[in-house]
Picture 1 (tube, rainbow, N blue to C red):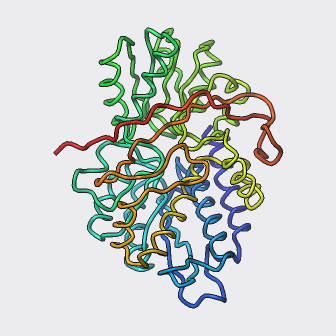
Picture 2: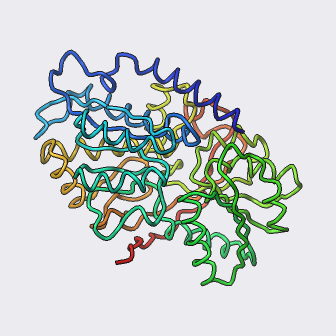
Picture 3: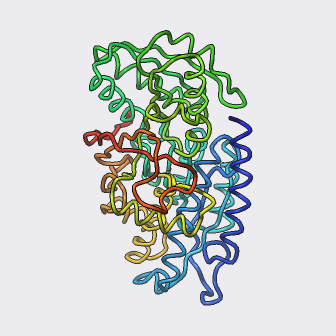
Length: 407
């Protein structure tokens, strides 16, 4: 699986760069002498690159759409948008990237953070710099505090919230026990704690195994330690989800695997036919809606090499649309943008819920869409150029109660 990640990352970066060559999303336009810079801090290399490449492309799609229509109107006065990009390399490089974007590039906002380790380090910097920062898949509870005002989750809720629909799924299936494999880093440990707390309040047993992050891809000992469980939760190990699923099949374990908010295309390629009907994942976007299908077709016409419109790309698209709306209303002052975001609700096409935030930056009443990877073509042409599979919606969770950090 590690080799697949590297091939996918290198190939996607090269083809994405070619697709964006000359785009106003990267480098401006002759028609604009004073573009507004939006920061991109995401993983373009390292373990979380498949998430980050999708995220950046979603942002580029939104920027190009806005610029083709004349730029940001209102307070933005028709100014074009540019993306200033920093690769956090799925690790500590995110700190230097954040500082470059805010101190040298003078961006008005930052979006795209995937890893909880990066978010834990940069959320404090966002508060100090008073620049709004939008997280994609960084869900560790500890990222936000009661005094956070410039950091916003936009797709993956806090770990305490994520654990709730997993318990609901187990209860819907009448299960008596569940196994989980988590990674030994901020998100994995946070979801471990949240799962244990949520399952303690239910009548379903939980067995948790802690595994390393890549380069480890052999999850056989951890799967065997789970025993004969009817459901495996890989939510706490995003880079290992596909390998966990594939190895479970090789070991004769037929239990479905609950995913880690992972790109569907990664799992489909890593696990092959073993994924069909057995890989369940939670998403903030709903692939069954006409809004998703229309946006996905536009995305794949622009970036056909990315093969599928993941919810990471949707979240990147949402980030740009939200900040652009804020600029049109209050101008390009980062503090005013953050205040506008806090004060308003945003309806993004294909999102499973309206985006609105608590005063500390958690999403208000997010709803997670549970989808299962199925064999067969998509419902319409132009929705998947990467294979004969489609994520079928099983159900949408009830609105989740926002996590409140301890005082």
